[in-house]
Amino acid sequence: MERDLIAKIGDLVGSAAKDPSVLLGIGDDCAVMASTPGRHLVVTTDTLVEAVHFDLNYFDPWHLGRKTAAVNLSDVGAMGGRPRWALLNLAVRPGLADGFWKDFSMGLMSRLSQYGVGLVGGDTVSTPDRLSVSLTLIGEVEPGKWLGRSRAEPGDLIYCSGNLGEAAAGLKWLKDCKGKRRRFKGRRMPGIRRRVSMVALRRLVARHLDPEPRMALGQALAADGSVRSAIDLSDGVATDLAHICNMSGTGAEVWAHEIPISRALKAISRILGISPLSLALTGGEDFELLWTVSEKNEAGVQRIAAKVLGYRPFRIGKMVVGDRVLLKTRRGTEDITYQGYEHRT
Image 1 (cartoon, helix red, strand yellow):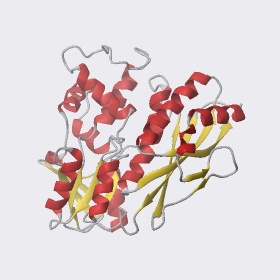
Image 2 (cartoon, one colour; image 1 turned 60 degrees about the vertical axis):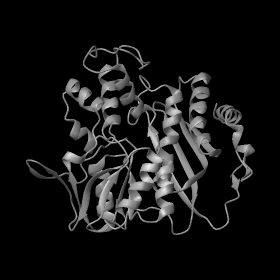
Image 3 (cartoon, helix red, strand yellow; image 1 turned 180 degrees about the vertical axis):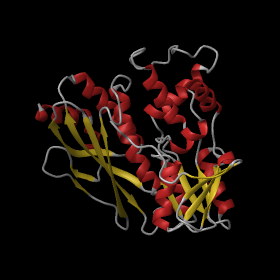
Image 4 (cartoon, one colour; image 1 turned 90 degrees about the vertical axis):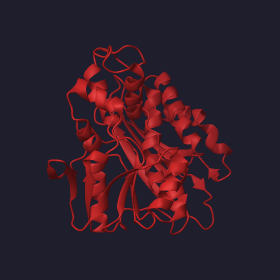
């Protein structure tokens, strides 16, 4: 079965063979690629496990393939890198038909090919119960131009690229509706009626099922060289900003009234009975880009980000002396260090 699956996926994603940088692709012990002279490699990997990171009651295989690619692409984008090659590892449980793998592969490659990435190898094994999907992504970056987590300084301003909490709200809605409808297909969902529009709900659900990596923004900020630190928001501001604090030896102050929260999130939060601010700070999987920049370079970086995004990025706080992430509200100050999203069974 494993050999057959490798052959099927290889046939479906044969586009890597058209990439002149791939000297030897799927089918041998190793892939052989020609890297670009004068570039450094960036490498990342992520694993998605059934019933932990996704649920096939509402995750169709096409979207699963796209998200498998997107979470890795987001990491490379957050470093300012250019993604080049991917390796796919699968732990396959019984009960998944050929059509599942066809749709998964098409979804995966629809995302990878968007950024010129070729699938060059991987591995498959059998597992008795849960499907596990792991992608390793290899990219390139100009020497000394990558964005990291360790150079933030007290006084730096903290920016993010878009609205927060929407993916967490979409996931919460999908979980609450499981059993009422197997998959979200843009139809009327229980409890909506006039309280939240279908357009808004589709947006929230799409933010979870099909996140958009901030590739172009990360590359533009890295090329400029003014950004001191950056990270993609996979676990929420409370945790991801804490990673920057830990690596940089600083603290951070987040301003509650500046957190970008959409009308859609506010509307769905009322229905779900959850604080939109809590979802925005701790929900995770928005895959927006967060970065820090000195006041001196703030205006220039704002212009670069606005040109890529089509709107001004959001200033949400500043780096301070200390080692904690502090949330400032009208009621006072709260420690939210590492209080972001954690995947659990």
